[in-house]
Length: 182
Image 1 (cartoon, one colour):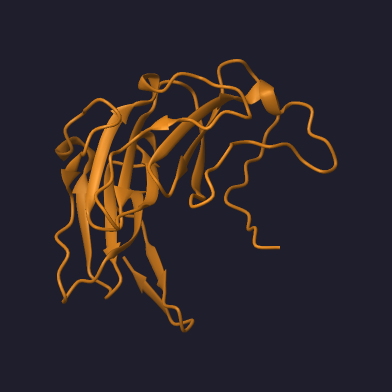
Image 2: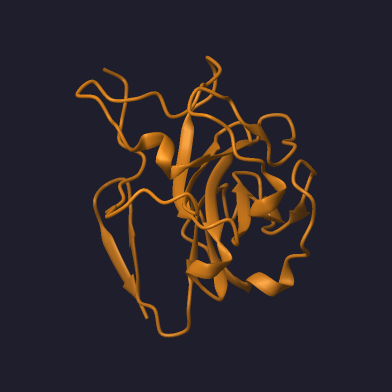
């Protein structure tokens, strides 16, 4: 009760060069070698240790060569190399990926290898597409940069996805209305 699936990956082999990279709402990032999950029990395994007020936002399969972009609800983002995060065991908590302002939280983690641009969408349906290269590469743990201006017109950031030219996008409202864009 109270839990939900955060990510799902098709896996053929558990290699030493593959990692599960996780991000939490409070800006924690964690990287664990895939071999740590080779023998999963029926009841499952603990993948990350979370504080009581924290929750897992996103998990990606990485190869230690990725550049990570974390986006927050109040329009901040940080881009850093995956190698800035040292590998840890399953029961570890992780390290700070971004320093959050008060009342802010991480809403998305995207990898540069997933697309050329990042599409950021706000609660009131406004969107902005920015090339990954426009975000300066920094060390993890900093404040990052402003990636979206929050106003009454836009609302808070609700999603960020890596996209390429030619991608079609479907957005779904909380009342179940689907909007498709080219």
